Image (spheres, rainbow, N blue to C red):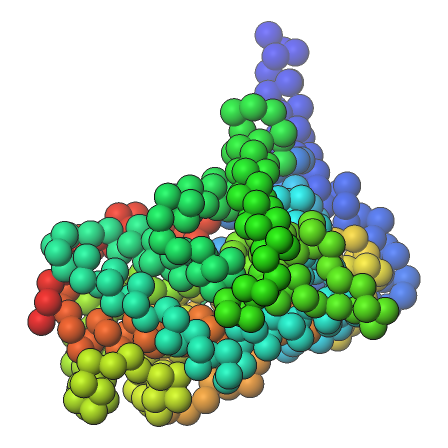
Length: 481
Ligand code: HEM
């Protein structure tokens, strides 16, 4: 009896204490001593339980309470705002959270010591633009930028994406009630298939759409390659998608004369050469197609869904948007709008920016420290992950007044320096940023001049993992004006 009581009174609390501080003792104890010897400190924070780290707390705020910003606010209340660095342990790794404009700027601009590491790069492609470094990266970036992100390319793309967008809106009105997220995914994928690999709408594009949905789920799953896991499924999806793109590539090699007519991403990558005149290998071309689809597909579809969502919630914004776009529409006689015309639509561009800010498609951007780095007296230890918590920048009232309000007019003034990092920063800044903005603006134009819609569940709960979206995918009742 005495022994049992002694066990409860002594050992259980001790065990609890040990578990609670386990990761701090294991990862931070010696580091703290080393830092203090060199006159620095580890950022404040708590690293949580063995193996799980702070995952339970993270999931509590993101999944259970559905108040993701409180995860950071609690840290600020506990440790103070300081320089905006906190230590933690998330997704299986010790990590430093950077959640102030200055720390984000510092990390994005110190590329020599903070490496980009995509999760499950074997699914995205280890020779793709998101994986390679140095000269190969610069060469690919410059090509991709010319192909999809610069004025000439955008002029061509504006023309190319409109038939599918216009047709999609017609079909939504015909159905009457649609899930916005499923529909924006379909139309985005159709356009991406055409833009990147010249694929026309049909069974091949539908199969690829399914394969990429599986592939994307695997990128965010635990990397356990056994049948039944999301990761294993994603690898299978990648293999099949690569097979389809490879067939297309083989077909093109046999008919090189068709390339000038098509002028799409696959042709461009096939022709790309380095200084020694070496072409990309077959796997490099395919990896890059896959990685561009991965980067551009979900991000664009989600932003489009959020535009529909917010415009339904803020009719006064839709009214102003409609007025601006009706003026343009009257001059067009049913022709497609051009990217130059889009750039004149001041209010529409503000709606685009506000949608992307609040969509927070990329809530956190990951880097890894390649050596101990000191910032304003704090050490970011070698091999620790650095999590650039850009979502917090976009929802902090110090950066954006009444941050959760959808207010396009806040863009009458530019954002304060370093507070708007929806597309990341440094040399890895999103290479599809102008393409994403253009597609969104074109969608807004056709929506505003031709259609009206309402949310079926205006008070639907939000889910924040893997990306923020209403749980019903923003179901809408949709009809012609
Ligand atoms: C609203 C839509 C989008 C958002 C919010 C977004 C966000 C981002 C962010 C935050 C990064 C930086 C990642 C990092 O530093 O680790 C990034 C990189 C990238 N994005 Fe986007 N993106 C969007 C649309 C697109 C589109 C349409 C494409 C093109 C098809 C694209 C292609 C890429 C690529 C290739 C990279 C990697 C660049 C590199 O490593 O050099 N993105 N994006």
